[in-house]
Image (cartoon, rainbow, N blue to C red; front, top):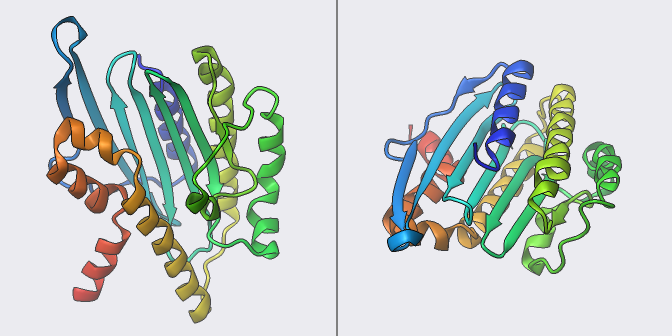
Amino acid sequence: MTLYQPFLDFAIELLQTRLDLQPYPIPAGFESKSAIVGKGKHQDEVLTTSYGYQAPKLRQIRAAHVQGGHSLQVLNFVIFPQLNYDLPFFGADLVTLPGGHLIALDIQPLFHNLEYQAKYTQPILAIFESYQQHLPWGGDFPKEAQPFFSPAFLWTRPEKTEAVESHVFAAFKDYLQAYLDLVDRAEPVTDAQALKDIEQSQLRYLRYRTEKDPARGMFNRFYGSEWTEEYIHGFLFDLERKLVGSQLS
């Protein structure tokens, strides 16, 4: 069992219980990929496994799980809503490196106006506040990333693995349950301008992530740049490609 496997197992089981879950196509060659890193007795296998689902209100639910022994464990788990809902994204970046744990968990807003915050951030704030004592703010965060996060952004660097297994896991469960409650209540958007704004907001976030993906360097090192770029643009953040494809068809 690896550090973030229980998170992934919980998420998939919960999604299957609460949603009409269907597979989301994973491009050939990206279901799993392994590489040998290090030398001699420091040699380790790094295995990256991809998961993809979709549901009536959710365009893509996907996970990248990287397992590389004690010093490298990563789970990137993101939910992208369909473009005719103003739902936020669900985002979990759970990272364990030789230097420690980096945890980022949020219900990421499409917009920052008061009405949107009241609808989508307010319900999460109490959960966020309940974890502050055990999971304090993790310090500096890139200024350019700040527009993509909510006031309930849980960004923390726990020193102990036990804190990840207990407090971070509990927070992950609470945030995901709360997000699915928002999905339950969401109504489709029909106003043409609002639909345009939703698409632009989703694309802004995806373009930011494809340009600045913090995993790019790691994947380049393990699997080479050609595989990495195709993985980022063709699976992890594929909306732009999908929109171009739908315009051509």
